[in-house]
Each structure stands twice: as C-alpha cells, then as structure tokens.
Length: 425
Image (cartoon, rainbow, N blue to C red; front, side):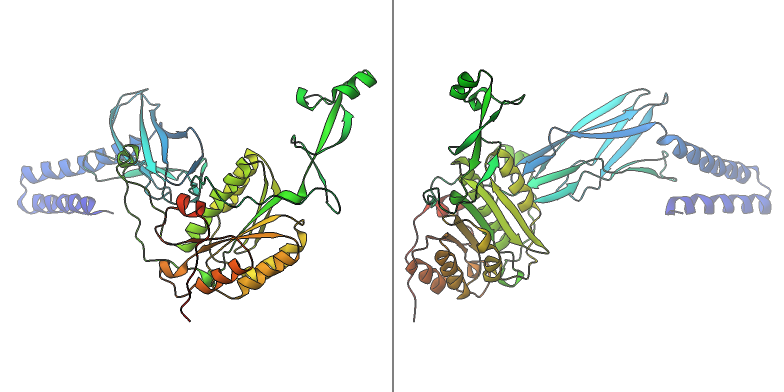
C-alpha cells in the first residue's frame, strides 16, 4: 500500500465516522466519493496495460566501444480503448542505456515508435532488457507494471585503432618439419587436387588437370604454419594497475558531432585488450594467420586462421576478457610455446616488469620463435612496477619493443620504433 492509497483510505474512514457522529449528509457523500475514487482507480489500473506490448529491434547486435548503438522501440496498443500514458523503462545493464521513455495518448489499435541512441563505453555482452512497461490510474493510487524478458544480447567489441606500422616479421622458408593443415581458404600453398564439389569457386579449379581428365578438378590449399602470429595477452591480476575512474556521461549528440573524443578507461587491462584487437586486425589485413591466447578464470586458446571471420572470433574472445587470471606470463608461454610452429611471431602484451619477461623472450628465441613486446607501463596507471630495465634487456636480445603509457595515442605509439631506455643505476 503506497502513501496515496493510505491518504484516501484515511479520508474515507474519517468521512464515515464524521457522518455517523454528526449525521450530516455531506460526510456521507464524501464517503461515497472516496470509495468511488478507490474502486474507479483500481479498475482503471487493472486495464491500463491490458493488450499493450513493447518491442525492441536493432540493426545489429554487435558493435564496438566508442560507437553509437541505435535501437528502435515500438509500443503497440492492441486494445480498443486509448491509453493516456505509458512509461517504458529500460533496465538493461548496458552502461548509459537511454531507452526509457514516456509515451502519451495512444489511441486504440495504434502504435508509437521512437529511437534510443546509446554511446558504447564498455566492452562485454549485455542483455537487451528486461524492459518494463508501466502505467496506472490518473491519480497514481494503483501503479501497474509489466516486465518483458530480454530477447537478445548486445556484444560490444573492444575499441580498435588504426596501426600503419608494426613489426611484421616474416616466417621461415616453408618445408622441413612444417605441420600442414587443410584449409578452405585460397592461399599460396597448393597441396594437391581433388574432385570438384558443388560450391567451389572458379578460381579453385585446376584447369590443366580438368583438361587432362575431362572433368572439373579443384585445387586444395594448406595454411603455412611457419608464418603464424600469436597474440598473448597477460591477464594476470597481480600485474594490473588502474587509476580511479568514474564513467563520464557522454551524449550521443556529442559523439555524432565529434565534440568529444572517447577515451579508454585508465586501466592496463583495457589498454592491453585494445592493443590486442588492433594488432589482430593489423596482421589479418596483411594476410597473416592470427591466433590468441590468454588466461583469466580459464585458459583461452583461439587457433590461428585468416580472414574476417577470424577477426570476429578474436574480438568476441577479447570482449569478455577480465583481469582475473592467476598464471604468470612465463608459465603461460612455457605451456604454449611448444605448440607454436618455428618461425611464428609471438606478440607479448603485458604490464609486468618482472625479470621473468626476459627469460620468456629468451625461451621463445631458443625455440625458433620471434617475440615482439608491447609493454603497458603500469607506473603511468598508478602502479609501482618500473619497466625500464626489462625493456632494455629485451632490446639487448633484439626483441622489438613498444612501450605504451596512460593517455598515449595507441595508433601513433604502436607505430613508432623502439625507444632507447636510460637506466638510473
């Protein structure tokens, strides 16, 4: 029972008692008025949401941090009676969700639509709902609401930056102990021929064999395992750092008109994830086979592959990555390096300043792998670990190093050559 109901009931009781004591007709009429108000409001509330539905539709259920997510809401009144007002409450956990709206004067058999635009500021998977439809009587005595369960989810990819230049180390010459795998993609490594199958494109047909056998013959291809790229994201919670941060409210108008530039949260893991996503796109655009490895609550290994579908898989894996791992980077690489073909490029993305990073790079080099280090400076994020010494030791090994600090332009920083590091002994 809400406050408004209590007030009306008190007035009803007082009017009835006053009428019994004074035997005045006025108090009896007031009692009838309060009783009629309660009954009428209750009936109006019971019918306020009958035959009313709300629908949410979006052009895509996948987007990227820094973009505007647009969603269309439609409120339908399937009944014959008009609805004076309806409130749509968007209770989705999507940060900054702006789908809540009040719709007034919807006639019978009518519908009303509106658009909601939300700037995406956090990666992850967010259910699009629940959506609550609320209404009631004119006096607010009996509020009514109906909840609609989420019908879909929004996958928000990490933010990516354009990288014009980054170490793109070539693989070793093919042959030897190369482990080859069949692929449906067209590569430079033709392994043989087979019978034509329905759906094979014309550029897969081997015309000499076709003419010789008088039937269509298709080429088979293999991925070159010696030119793979493995991106390793260090999600060990013990090496992460972050500045205190409160999410800033960003309006969709500011984003559309470019009045405000979106900035990554001041956290080493957020910078690491964006670096990993940007580098995955960089290598895939150059025809490399890319895989990704990280350990948070469990070990995640995405095998190497090429093409746009592989980028989507990598972004999906990175969208849900959280810095709650417990395995140091050295242990992770000791576990995985033995499964990586010789000549593969291994990109280490870490905020660790441990000397073990030098041993990890040395291990990779001794196994014939080609490490590249992207060091996220934890000190610039409020941490205490100094990476100067480990950066210099990696450069002595001949490992390309990129150092990223808080508020750096990732596109520019990752494209620069390795910095020279001065140590204070």
